[in-house]
Image 1 (cartoon, rainbow, N blue to C red):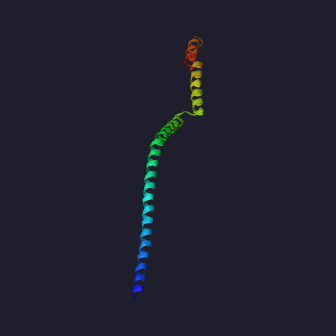
Image 2 (image 1 turned 135 degrees about the vertical axis):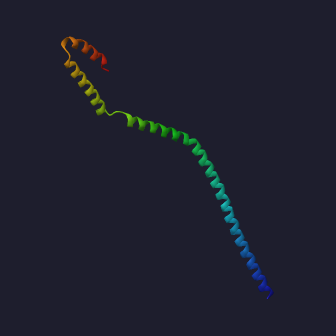
Image 3 (image 1 turned 90 degrees about the horizontal axis):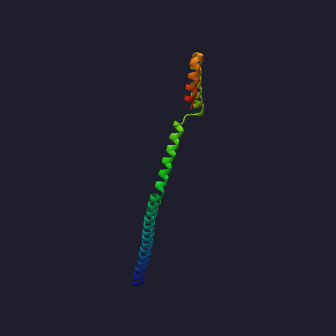
Amino acid sequence: MHQSYEDEKRFREDAIARLQEEQATIQSRLDKLYETIDLIDLLNRITFERKAPKWRQTQRRLANQITEQQTMPTIVSGSFALTSKSIERIVLVSRVTPQENRYSNRDFQQSLP
C-alpha cells in the first residue's frame, strides 16, 4: 500500500510539474507577445510621424489641384466669352459713322488682349 501511495504521489507531482511548465511556457509566450506588440507600436508611431507630414503635404497639393481644375474656365466657355465680346465690338463698330469709326477702330484694337 505504501508503494501505491508513493506512485500516486509521484504521478500527481509529475502532472503538476508538467502543468506548471506548460503554464510557464504560455506566460513566456504572452510576455514575448507583449514585447513584440510594444515594438510594433513604437515602429508604427515612428513610421506615422515620419510619413504623415509627407502624406498631408500630398493631400494639400491634390486638394489645390482639384480646386484649380474646378475653378478653371473650360476652353469652350472661354472661347464663347471671347467670341461674344468680339461680336459685341463688331456690332458697336458697325453702328458708328465712318469718321467715328476711325477712333472706334483704334479703341477697339487697344482693348484687345
